[in-house]
Length: 336
Ligand SMILES: [Zn+2]
Image (cartoon, protein in one colour):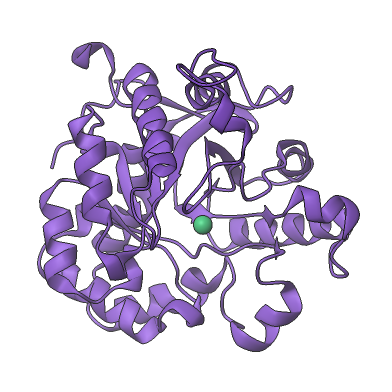
C-alpha cells in the first residue's frame, strides 16, 4: 500500500496546534480521556466523578505515557459520549503528549430529536446539521476552543445501518471528501458490519488509506478480517485490556497471525480506555478490567508481541507509520 495520497507537508491538528504528521511518533489511535453523560452529570452526578481529580489523573497518566515513549493520543470522545473540549484542553496544556480531538456522533441506532426536525426536507428545515457541525469542528474548531478535530468518528453497532446511522455516516463521508480528514469507526465485528462501513464510505469517495474500522480486534474471524483488509482500510486492534469484549490472548494471536500474512501496514493498536468513563466507572474497572489502561500496550502487550515473533519493524509500522498515514489529511484536490 502507498501512503494513500497524503499531502506532502501534511499537518495534523492537535490541542496545541498543528503538528507535522512526521512528528506524531508512537500513537494510540483510539482512546478516551473522559466519557461523560452531560444530562445525567448535571442533575444526577456520578459519585466517582470529580473534574479536578479527573484532570490530575489524566495529566499524571499521560506524562507516564510520554515516559513510556507514547507521543500522540487520539481522543475519540465525540458528542453522544460527552465530549468536553475545554476539560481536555486543561489536560493538554500540562502534558507533553500530543492530543488529537475528534468529531462525529456516537449513537448506535437513533439521533436525538433535534435532528428529526432539522435538515433539508424536515419540519424546521435548514442545511444538514451534522455536516455543518463536522465541517466547523474540522475547519474552524470545536465550540470556542479553537481546537480543530483531526478525525471523524462514526458508529455502527448491532442495529446496523439504520436511517439515522446512515445519515451520520453520509455526513462524515461528505466532510472527509471536502477536507481530507480521516474517518474512524466503531464497528460490531460479530455482525461483520465493518464491511458495510467500508463499502459505504469508499462508495462515497472516502480514501480507504484514511479509514480505520475500529474494534476489529474483538474478532478472531479471519475470513471477515481478511475481507476487510482487501478493501484497503486499516483495522483497529484497539481494545487491549478490555476483558469483557475479548481476551488479550486472542487479540495478540490475531495480530500475530495478520503480521505473518504481511498486513502490518493495515493494523493499528490501541486500548479504547479512559481516565474516567461513566459507562464503566473506575471502581468497576479496578475489579473487572485491571489492565484496561492506556499503558497496557507499552508495559505488557508490545513485549509479548515481540517475544512471540513480531519484529521491531512491525511495531514501528503499526504504531508510527500507519497512524502518520491515517492522520495526515487525504489529498483532496486530486479527488475533486
Ligand atoms: Zn472508543
